[in-house]
Length: 185
Image (tube, rainbow, N blue to C red; front, top):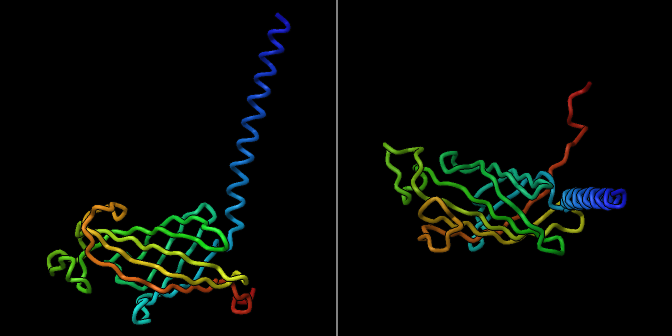
């Protein structure tokens, strides 16, 4: 009986040790993400890849849990604050998928805007896709992007009818606190 109890205790200790190792590895993964050079707050510019014309300015926060939030200068009815998810692609390069819904607004009559439905969901969605590389200084990034809008609520659906696409050139610079501009104590 005593030997059997020792075997059970050993199995319990082995299980506890395995659980601790798993937790440590999972925690290490989160810490590793925080070390990615994309993590932080950025002032970003989207330009039309063909004309070079600025299409929007963006405050962009990339988080260590591989989520991201944008606040852009677009019409609020177009959904100017939305979230995304990112992955490391290697060599300081990162991919972003950033979905959003579309709402009726006068700047996009092609999506069915009328005076009676302004601000209502128009059964369409978009996705911003980015592939950006952070430079060696860690203070700038650049790369191509694409906005694709489709009919329906799922911009990830490859069978959804495409309503609009735009290729982008994206540049960003890191935002930091300039302590010299803070109010005195």
